[in-house]
Length: 404
Image 1 (spheres, rainbow, N blue to C red):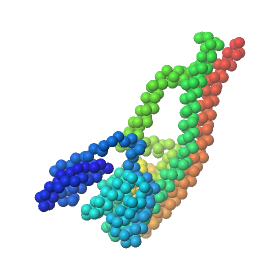
Image 2 (cartoon, rainbow, N blue to C red):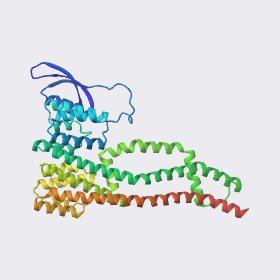
Image 3 (cartoon, one colour):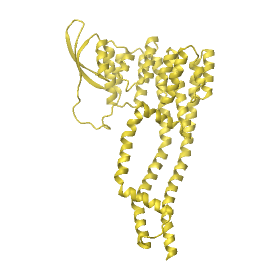
Image 4 (cartoon, rainbow, N blue to C red):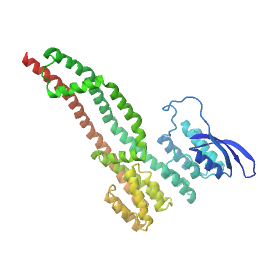
């Protein structure tokens, strides 16, 4: 969020000045026009002071979002006005970044903006699914029920992410240790071994091919270290930026769907998110096509998103949603079959909730097995690296001892 100062002309032809928070200059102008003002000057206000990125992050934690959503649902259900509920939650939340967002949302609502439109100005915090479900809840007068469903959905997503991170923690540590040991051996141990071999056998000493290869790698790492450091920095700095681009995201998602073990997890997570989100939107009264388009942005995979957007076009032509889904290369056949049953019985929401529950259980089981599979693999890889270095060391020593 950025702060903008403005000078505008009101309905009474008077000039007014002030400041607002918005995501961009365009959205700031749009907001002023919706308030009945004709903007003359709108400019961004530069924030003073130096802030480190990792100390001044505006990211809102999923835990804070879940607590906010569930408490807001409870307060609205109890009859507390929306603005007063937001003021209470603003005072309770510990996140300073979230406090600013809630304050701006409450201010917009006081100015006559709907809750969904106010959330839409904070799209960096609230997802399209969240905003559209709130919009449907406002239209149907069931905002408290919708917020409860959103809280459940957020808790499910957070649970899946937490389990996946915990399952990958130990393999990640092993990978780090493996490469650290390899670098240490190649930069400190191998050069000394190479010197010993030359001292004992002379410049023309016969060295096994494996030892030559390892000495060559060691020489490159010690003499051209700046190239390695530069490559690592490029990967650390530019790879995340590339992945955020549309092309980079597609390539990353395509790669994930080609890795045998990860493909299973990615597909099951995408199906679980799709089923629960689509069911929630349908039960909120959102149209089928709009539900598909919104859900496509929530599954977390660009290839699945492309398939759902293509399916929305087919549905707009009069076909049931289960028809294009049956031809999917990613979704399992059971999803389209269950959806077809829901379309025939008029219980799409109930059936897809069962599908979501099933695949969330499958994700839990797969993630647990993933951890148990990766751990021995990484131990074997670590042992293989150390074994190669040991073999490259013992080879020339054995040859030299036989010659002596």
